[in-house]
Length: 123
Image 1 (cartoon, rainbow, N blue to C red):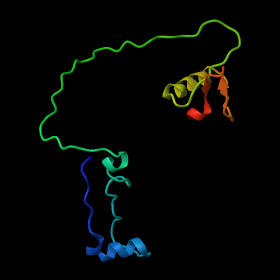
Image 2 (image 1 turned 90 degrees about the vertical axis):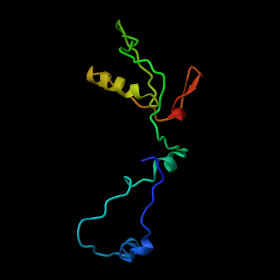
Image 3 (image 1 turned 30 degrees about the vertical axis):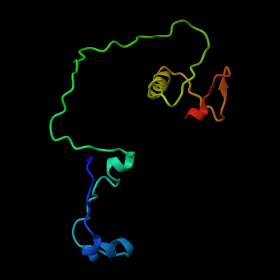
Image 4 (image 1 turned 90 degrees about the horizontal axis):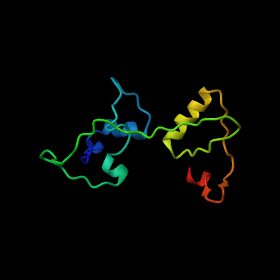
């Protein structure tokens, strides 16, 4: 998947080439895509790839348990949450707000919150 891909030379297969530039009815099953309709990963992400012919040995420590920060909001009164779309967790938070019968509103214009963050330009 990371190595450079080599595709058939369409000059050697004129029936395939003509099918690309002119409408042509083919017999049999359709041709399968070479690599999910994209280019190879190194070209897509501008990466240099080196072939590893031996297993990679790295000193690692197994993590048995993750310690997540637990937070909750208590109390009553009116208020709002300001969420940024660049954070994946904001979508989970919005779903929880909707499940609790809360309301979600979207900003239509760029704005600053206390002069610190140009929120919509981050999206």
